[in-house]
Length: 258
Image 1 (cartoon, one colour):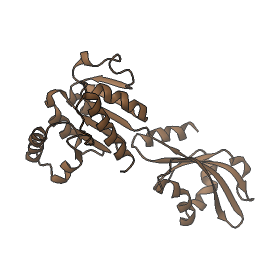
Image 2 (image 1 turned 120 degrees about the vertical axis):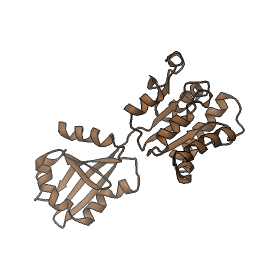
Image 3 (image 1 turned 90 degrees about the vertical axis):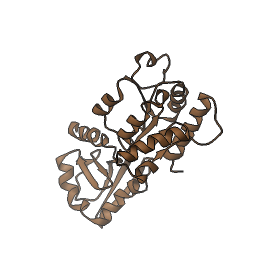
Image 4 (image 1 turned 30 degrees about the vertical axis):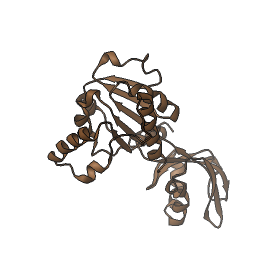
């Protein structure tokens, strides 16, 4: 069973949508009652790991059937996030009931820059169930008095951060470095990533300057189109708190598919 949960953690590192299926009821004579409580792990491509060799041996022959596989994968394909009980008919003599529960990887907000907008943004997004990391090369700006709701504060050169951190599909990236001087460097490192959201602050002139440098580096218009710049929904925001609200609103919209 320990290997089963180890496998689950490994798979989540790759930001996959996973579901655990716990065997809760057996109606039939071919499946051993001793398997009640056993489980397996699967994603949208199929079964990844069984909790025991016996479960794998007894169920594998049925799981190869396309109809059964499609019944199990339906919650993944529908992007469901709620747990549910599901009955699966293996054949006319064997029915099983599973408790299906999504294993959700908490979305991560990475804020590049610990300036005056970052402070209210982190406070707001901490209410939205994000794991929050703030990165800045200024150690004096990174402390839990300014960011009490952050999960991680990293006083690093930005290039050092990227040398040790992989951007994942469930990441939301906000680029608000001081005076915009590192915006180009950060965006160049993340623009080809699988991040769910990339937003960069700046005036039209500043954004155009960054984009032109990226074009010279070989990045395409499609690459640039993935970036939300200027960042945030247009609500005529002026103060740092208002700008933070606009950014948070855009992040929510992206997260909810709007």
